[in-house]
Length: 122
Image (tube, rainbow, N blue to C red; front, top):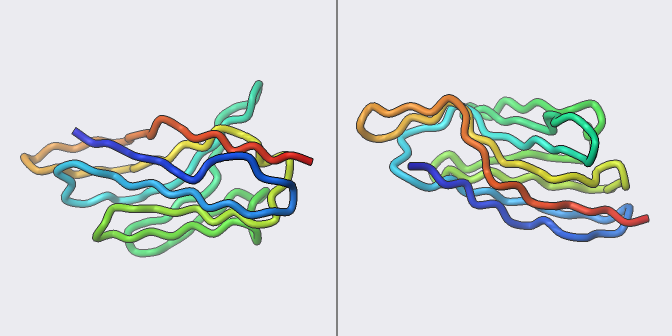
């Protein structure tokens, strides 16, 4: 039905930058919000950033000023530009789509990607 394909994860040195990409595919009519969550070993999943279809953005306090989220509504694609990376940013990052309307009057409240590993070395 819906596939979220993530890319851009990897290993980066502290202070460096990384850009994550996620493209949603399928018979998608619209997506209300897209975003990124992350989960570090032994920790709860936490919201990193979200962006609504109208462009409104929200960020976790821990990444404000360092991360930037953007999207292309026409292509159902979302990016997360991560700058000044810290070791604390090491986690599996999950792309999300919230409020997905599909052809045939189908609706998905939340959809998650498979996750991509981001490791920041010190």
